[in-house]
Image (cartoon, rainbow, N blue to C red; front, side, top):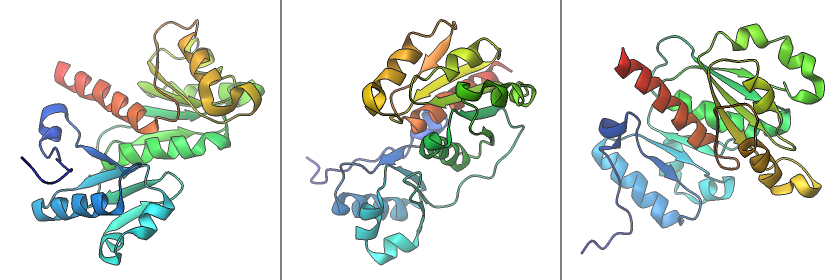
Length: 222
């Protein structure tokens, strides 16, 4: 019986096209140190998600020095990201700048796998002209990851204007009944725009992975 609580999946990239990421939330400093040591021994690279500033600061200096850490998105790169290649087929739309922590997690996840993306920030429906002014540029992409809190109307509006794949990410941004993101989640799940795929609240990492699965499927079909 293994004595370690950590069992890493070094073959995930070969099976599904992108490597395992380490969800840092809930892990102890000892867990994270053990994971990094195992990755180092295998010359493996890892994306770490939900790594708080406090958890990062608690790591030994030797580990911190090897991490490309960004506190805003709470992500870290252990090893070098893949070089970005190919056309930019993913648009990342943010309803407001208050959603930027999620869009940044999306872009960091895509960047780790070498997948380029374009950010369209602050295009929420409260000022619809901001979206309409950028619509032609958005339509140059195949996939739109649409991030919104509050009433989360943006994915529904985009769904009526954009013909590609739409992945909605509700955020916990808001106050009153919108606090926590459940109103945004229910709004996206109730969207009258057909085919809007909805992720869980604040799940930028999952949205990026969903988009990469779509791209991999397109490539295999070719």
